[in-house]
Length: 183
Image 1 (spheres, rainbow, N blue to C red):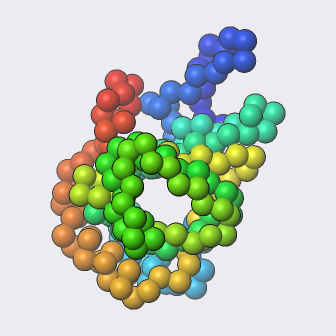
Image 2: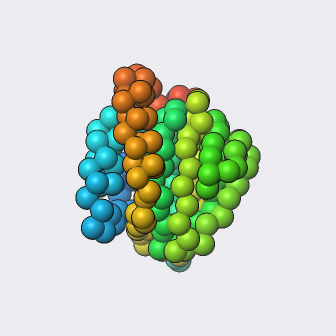
């Protein structure tokens, strides 16, 4: 469970963004690359280029509501691989934009999208990056399952890394964490 404020009054609990653990350290998410070693390789290189940030803002047990909220910040032009989850998820774009959502749509702050468990999807962060909140419920963890990624998507990821790696390292936090004095 994410750290919550010690102050709880009449069923209210505060979860501080500054206390939210990195998602990969929380135990609330795992990745399944299957046999695709090329996608695993480029995903590992992308991660080392500091292309994104993910934090577990809220992770409640069922008896406290069962909601989980993950903060995701993908830096400019980051290409998210084709993948699916083992839980239903709802996303809210907080800042920036998503371009090429499923190859076609552009999403802006306030836009939302829902993805049913087992449904593959992908997108690219816009030129200013994108912050999204991912919400799921009644699950102890979520598994990111990488699906078949066409060669073009892997090539896009390699090119994005080549073109953006230095700029990504210079961006230390997304707008939400820049605005939060405790972040």
